[in-house]
Image 1 (cartoon, rainbow over the protein chains, first blue to last red):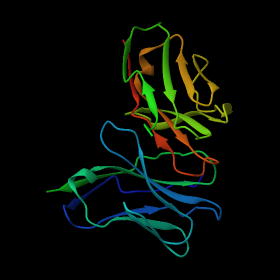
Image 2 (image 1 turned 120 degrees about the vertical axis):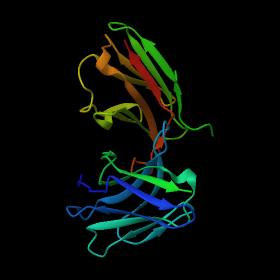
Image 3 (image 1 turned 120 degrees about the horizontal axis):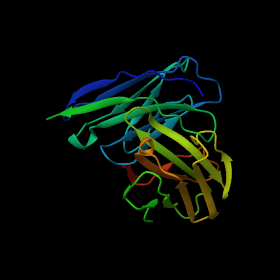
Image 4 (image 1 turned 180 degrees about the horizontal axis):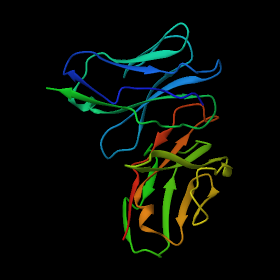
Length: 108
Length: 114
């Protein structure tokens, strides 16, 4: 699976959009981009995934660049409950390989 | 649905003892995954099953670790004998329809080996 690079930490003001970047320059054509998050002491939670098109669900939006070498997860109106570690994962089979993720802190 | 169920939620044991962690996946999910999370190594995949059959156990750290899935609704992860370096949070996850779908994680079992 392709390796991903994420900033170790980010802050975002409550109510603002949180934009979390991820670089995956070695992604292959059949690999998907997945985002999970882990709130303190809980199991990871699936957020969204995509292949090449932008995706949106009730939790977030995923923007994938045309060359697929990077993506951005957008939480449109961040709340304090969105404070968590966010993992960007690229995978082409059943396995998830977690990196170190981005620790997002929502500031009141 | 109750989600993925793990037991116990916390386990404290002494070095050398056998430890058994349990997982009940979401009904209808045909993939089951065991992960371990530590501060030093992060979240690691240990083993996963498809339709009760182990598919990839390359993440199992050593022979002291074993996992079974006797039926579609139950899996165990056993450590025998346990060592202090096995202290971690162990997560079970399940996934429907081919494993490419999202994985649903349980609350984890926090294991402390003294």
